[in-house]
Image (cartoon, rainbow, N blue to C red; front, top):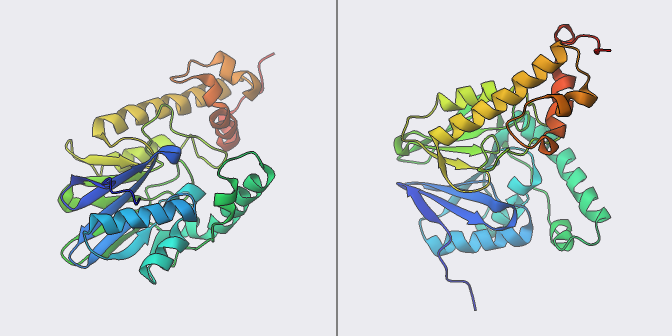
Length: 287
């Protein structure tokens, strides 16, 4: 029997969010008189078909465009399914994400090919890659008819190609993985931990105290949550700078630093932070 449970919840006028248990991914629909814009498309063709069914069940209008917040697979592996289900759609992303999506996807496919025990292996490997068709460098405005939506690349953070989506008339900001409803947000091998805090400063400048913030993963949050996460990311960045300036080697940084989160979750942050520091900010290791 088909699932009749409503999946998309209206969090602001004509802005609906669906939360999916796998990876706690959020998919957002922004409605205008010309149709619906979908932000992120999930992590496999099979999951994207569920999303497509949920869009039809909502009945809020035709799907007319897609946005991928960055190049990680869990945010765009549903692209091909959406085009298959709803017709030829423009797919928007930053220039960086568009240029690096194929390489990023190849790494994902290789990882699942090597992990025969993963229950999602066959599902992910059955997915067809569909790349963005429209990319931009800093900002672009999309016309949904009676509403405009802004796509903004605020700087490097979770990746080098993150974008946020601003719906000004509804006071909604979709943060992608620059904002995650988790402590800490995921800091991976392609993150920029020293720049992430200042990138979030720009994002915070797009908000009011009443802004509804949709993270890439987890529950809907608010400006105060983003401010707190930015503060903790700032502590991580400044701690790395301080340790390196005092000559503490990278290998000892996790043990010597005072961190806002479990140090075991910050191995990539410290390694990347040390690598990204200008040479003049490092001293010879203490002996």
